[in-house]
Length: 528
Image (cartoon, rainbow, N blue to C red; front, top):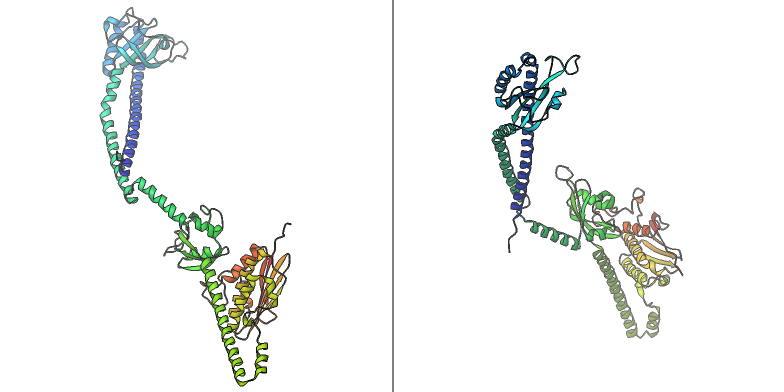
């Protein structure tokens, strides 16, 4: 198999070919221009010589002699030799030669048409005569050499034809070709060496890779980029997204990102991470997805905008797993408390039986209520098994924190609202439990109708400061401290869920003394 030419050799050959073609074309044009310049130079000289002969008094006066050639021939030959022309021919009105380099031709008719100069016009061009093909000029001779054709009384009495052989013009051009060829040959050689230098430079810039290797690397890059589970977004110095893989578009939840402005496609916190640079990562929301965002930043150490890369890792599963683990831990603690309480009850019953207090033991057993501290109350049964289970876990957690949690429910939520209700109630209750202190109260109210579900979470804690109330649902805002990396997500997620369903989320002062968070989730009309 014939091995393909290397990229460097291909570039060198292509550039050398271009240099040679351009040099050849320029050379042809230059030779053409030079040939025209030589021809124009000869024409100007021949016109000057012909006009000077036509105006010589000795020539004009000789036309009145019986034999004009006697006076004209010597003058014409002297001028021809002095002007380095091939011939100088003077003719009369009948086109009869009165002078010629070959005296034997005197008295003969000219071999070309003399009508144009005999009509009073100057003519130039190439014709073939007795001496061969020549470039010639023909001018009229007027009766008064100092007059013009339009002067009154002037008349044409003859013509002067001067010329030079085309072979002499070609010889003159050929004498100048060596210099031109040397110049263009040097330019071609310099161009080839320049092409070799450019090929080597390009080779270094692409790390010595061949085209097939570059194509393979690009293909591998595209494959790896789009198969990554992490989202990758690249932004240039103009703030334009130059590339984004499938995972990034899925996490952002918007159409093709490439070619769009970053400030138009990325949410505020994501854009802030991109601009500031977060090599360790920050927990933010992409739509309703919690993601870990890392970035190299858009500016270098000098503050210049250079573009950057944003990496997004889906934190939804881990976030849900952590919340589930917290719930399981709370449930475990509640069950452990139940087991401890049940063991104490058995000890009491055992002691009463040992003392023979049968009636007291029977009365104590009747007073023990099944379900214990994990019972969310009779109203919670209408909320559905998933939401009831969630509230049971929260009750266990509240008892562990010594917070009295009460559940009030009216109506049964639509099945399509359960998933969003779990997100809303879970985040609001967690937020309230963190705000409460031992001994505080917490009430969860769920009012479900055919058109909407309203959730209110009241607590008797410290409440939300007035200055923070307008921004408490913003991502990254938290009343727990300044570590925004891990906080400020729950309430922002609640508001996004409410807005997606066309509802609202607000905060106000609670009748219990703390904060009241209220969320309204409209229910879509059912088509029967």
